[in-house]
Length: 474
Image (cartoon, rainbow, N blue to C red):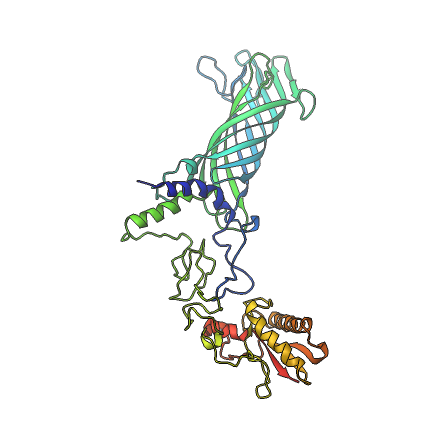
């Protein structure tokens, strides 16, 4: 497969960047998105919006075998004696740094058994002169390399459920070693944790993981442990080492559906290359889907509810060429700004900007973005005209705020009050006598387009027109 330089650079950078955003993080428990420009579902690139779980807890049990020591667990035919087996258990806290590397803080506890007989249920004899057992506790920091993700081929389309991991690290070891011979059983050596003379040790090995589901993995692991002590087995001649084989479970923590160690970033690049190479081949380009069918995968789509037929930019946001709040799909004057109630075209309203008149007693055209009470720059000319008009009359006026029908009644009531208050404050700050105006919020109870209940029944320009502030003569 030929991969150009740009695609190769993307392949190298994606593993580092991919774990900071979540493929399902573009949902919100607040307002839904808007069809207008400036999507409501825009999330900053922060730790809170990372794409994958990267913490886990692992636990397992196993069998330690002392094989490089004066006393061993497995005997060959020439040495005689019984094979003796101990037990072990581990518990670790795991952190994935990238899709291919992580760290483990691990606690191990166990008992090795070595020598000619099991000291738990047998005694020394002439043919089995000595036996030993060692109770140990260990804490270590391990590096975790995910070889399957590190070496996975771009053209490997097989289901990703098996992963080979490599581990290596150091820690501190404490133990009590007992030996038993014809004279009886005795404590041969003791190393206490964090006391003078405590023992450092190292361990390295590999594990094969199977992904049961998005929350649980099963792992078989084999580790080689170098104690650095000659007395670990109870006899002083040889520096002791042992194997520890375990079977365990990994519980993946977090709110997201997938874990970083099971993410295959090169697969996404392969899908795109394959589509470019053979457009007739039916390949799923978007693993997370493209729910609004705008051609931008949901992983990168900043506007997840783009209406059918709308042109979008690379982030999936519908084009609004004249930035008037009406997307090009619904805008009948694409290059000239205009209000939403006039389909994005300029109105033939008088130069007063539609300020209060004796006939209408209302001021239209002050609209707000979804879930926002911020006065838009496009509203300031109308409001400045309102300042002049109100100051030139003896009447008093009511500033009325409204919303569309999204969200709850209580929330919309508060939002409409904030919108009305912000407009009132603007007028007062620009010279209107505060005694001549009052503000009131009517939430979703005073819709310009009552048929927009629920909001999904109407195009976005009508919902935007419902998110307004207007004036009434008192």
